[in-house]
Amino acid sequence: MTRLSRPSARRLAPAVLTAAGVALLAAGLLAYDGPVSARPISSDPSASSETARASAAAAAPLPTLFLPTFPPIDASAPPSVAPSNRVATRIVIESLGIDLPVIAQPDPSYPSCNVAIYLQDPRLGQPGSNKSVYLYAHARTGMFLPLLTEVRRNGGTSMIGMLVDVYTSDDQHYVYRVSTVLPRVPVNGHFLDKAVAVKVETLWLQTSTGPGARFPKMQVVAGLVGVEPAPHADAHPKPHPRDCSS
Image (cartoon, rainbow, N blue to C red; front, side, top):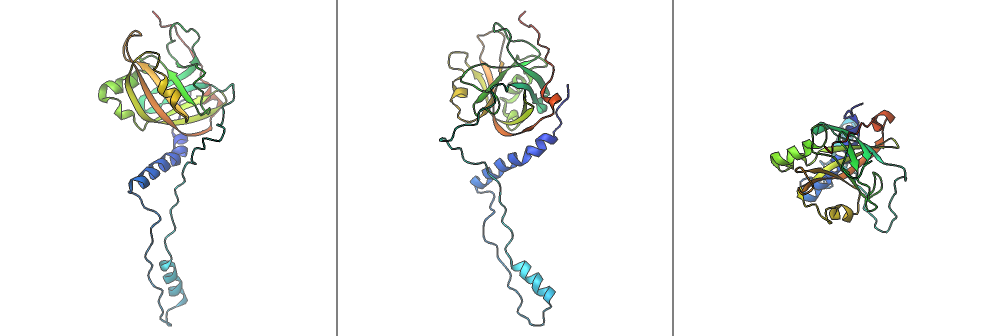
């Protein structure tokens, strides 16, 4: 399987930096539109034209730094909807060594091993649908175990800011950034409520905190950073799901 190199993330880094710049502006830590003191142009008639031009350049205010911002969300505008046949096909969290094909669960009785699975629920969506995208996998070696390991180590705070790459069946590469970790979510009729309530596209990752359905689940939440075309081979890993119910 071709592993993702980070040039793609570097190309999308301006969007991440934009978010950071906006946050700094909001906090008052970055100012870019304040007045700039200008030195007066020399009035000495003996000054050369080159000196006059240099003085004029020094007197001109520094160019304003404009940080691009994301457009405001217009609740009245119809959301962009992913093609009906677009589904997630691969998830990569390079920082944690996670690289898994993503499939629809073929057997609803018990999740397969060696893959991640997208939750099929009409209230949820796929990448590009402006809905929550929900992927889950077992907390086992080679799957989502690193998520649980980080939660046990430091409550999951080390995952905040990590980039998550999701590829789709139509050769697109979506990049998300982890914003929230929910270490223990009770398994009941409401465990999807937060994901369903989100009104912008969000990626949700779920894994177990212990064997059996009685143990809470953990959820990792990530916001959309950007999207770009992906090589076909990167977006179509060969899944080898294994029955791990025993």
